[in-house]
Length: 173
Image (cartoon, rainbow, N blue to C red; front, top):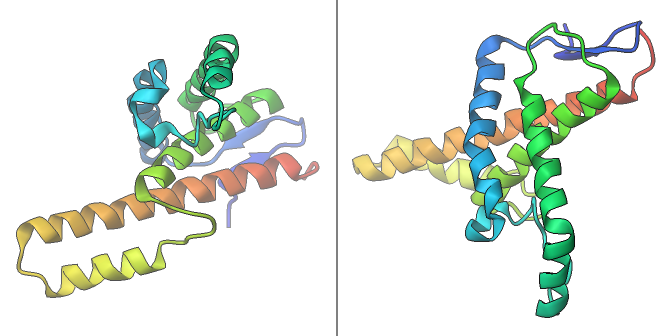
């Protein structure tokens, strides 16, 4: 089986992913990028921008003034790395940025799904599948489909991060 992310003998990395998957990742990055302008306006960005001083409003405001723009720029640069094409060589720095971009997408989706700790979504998925099997309510069925799709996307993003970590840890093949 081909690994979806591979470190080559020359030390570069390549994505062996289909263009549909890469297009999806790029589309998600394009949706997330404008939200970075004001992270406090969207609670879904909490994991990307966790408060540095939760108990001290003044210290948090000072931190945001001093470091907020740098963190937003870093997140934006990682999302920019997601424009990578399949089989196009990347150096290690670019591979790390690509992985960070995918992880940013995963963190935001995880926040939106309400994931806590090692939650694998099994209960949420089972509930959604039960609705699909038993419900005659079109709105409930649509919501169940949306939840299942979100969990599938979360699993895909998690797998991509894991493959990237393995590739970065791997020695030459």
